[in-house]
Length: 334
Image 1 (tube, one colour):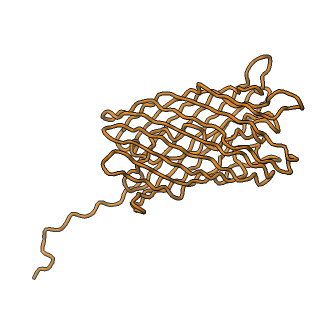
Image 2 (cartoon, rainbow, N blue to C red; image 1 turned 180 degrees about the vertical axis):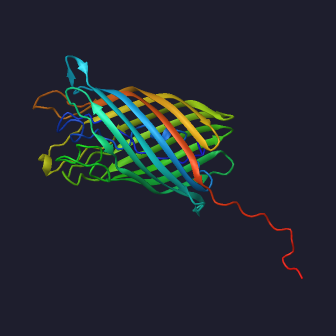
Image 3 (cartoon, helix red, strand yellow; image 1 turned 120 degrees about the vertical axis):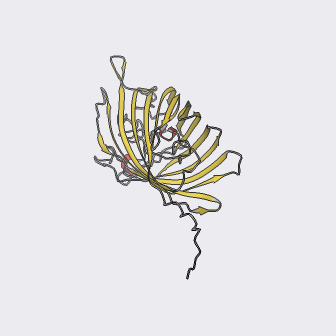
């Protein structure tokens, strides 16, 4: 399943890094639902054979808050850490539509995070459920190229608390996520570009709407016998402004950020179970355009910069019965 896996949009975990209203979007929200890099564990535009698959992904993120508005105590950068586990199901019924193979995904993540002094937050619990009711994957003849398009949604089923709904792990809004994946899968190569966008609805408590987020994730791996290895990389950035509400008296945070990361991946096929481990270091993380804390004050924009380590297990739970061999006996006998 590793090399022909669906582009599983496993819900991420994000350190809660905001310092207060007007910094890092709404207080308590970093600005994205999905931790960048989560689809890199062997995912591609290919679709595995019919069956029901499951996957478990473990993630840890170690970072510092950077940017012109980054908080610090005594000149020391504020730390941000997160760890989580996501369990999901991938269903491939074998249906064909418009020449494409259909599949569907559902994922439930749990996470914990902590942010150091002077913010001192450490929420933990269940994050929003991610549902992909439909993905369609096309195989382009014998060229080795595959294309997949899908539409997913984060449902606000996570732990929601506080006056803005952002004091815990969940977020009180829906996030629509369209995706486009292009892969070259031939001779053991997996060359994949996965592009997807987070489109947020308004916070049902405050009415504030966080801006759209663009993800671009890249895989360039080679399989030799049971081993897979190669580089992976990602970009994530905000591409539209937030929209304020009466709850914030029309104040809007125009903080923008851009993050780039890269690192190695190694995987192995143990027969019924495939394991992939990879790590990425964010070598560039910039933030700008934040709301001044006071009139005439300095830019309050900030974002995290660090490294992530991922481990992904995947295996097939169920497969349809193989068709029976044709009988060699006559259909009718005396």
